Image (cartoon, rainbow, N blue to C red):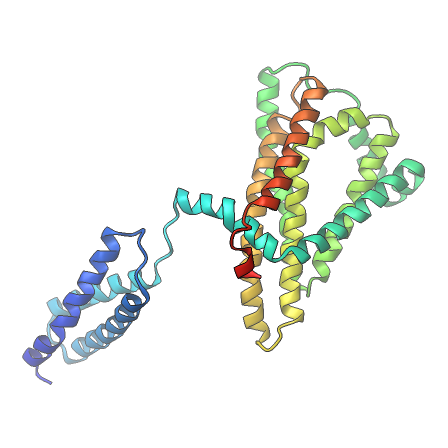
Length: 327
């Protein structure tokens, strides 16, 4: 094929790709229709071939640069990441996150049982038989935990409060996310690792809680944890349910390959973890700045009860509109 004939026959597709690229550029929030995406992909592949032909036949640097730029722009349109917007974030929180939890609720209830039952059992054991707690949890850890709630942390909001709580906020985020991430990531061991993490954390936290109650510091302890616990404990269980979901996808691929099954279940699991991470961020801010405030305990119990009811209603009522289509 001669260069002039090549230009005459191929310029139509080049102009069409330019138009599609410009459409995506000027209206980034609007998705292309399926037909447009198919057309864009077809033209993109043909222009990739045009570029290779121009390079091999040395038909001019200007033409090669033009087609190279056009191929790059087409690639960005086809493989661009979806724009992150406040609207998408709000839709995820109000519908996507709770909807996926409804869809995968069997894993949530399983994770809740693996965490809550050992927690409650261990707490009662530590209250009735304190010596057992000391055989499982290091004595120094139990001692520091009870001492931390022997008195109120602060009696006013001053410079010391602001400085210490600001630094603790980062610690709470890292600590909470670390626990949640382990609960999720250990799911790759066919869910066994996640079950172990939930059981272990439930037992240890239960023993520490029981020890604090047995020492007589339950009032300071529960008034401190009730508010941020609504988000923190729920998020840990959700992260655990994501890990169990990963494990289930590996154990029960059905008629699909294990990789396809993991990809399908992993998509929902990652969305659950993202939602849990947002909840843990909220919990960290509450634990850092509200939970230790020098205010009447009645206010903390009231706000904490409100937060627990809010979390329960959020997951009960939100995301139900499209539940039947997802199940």
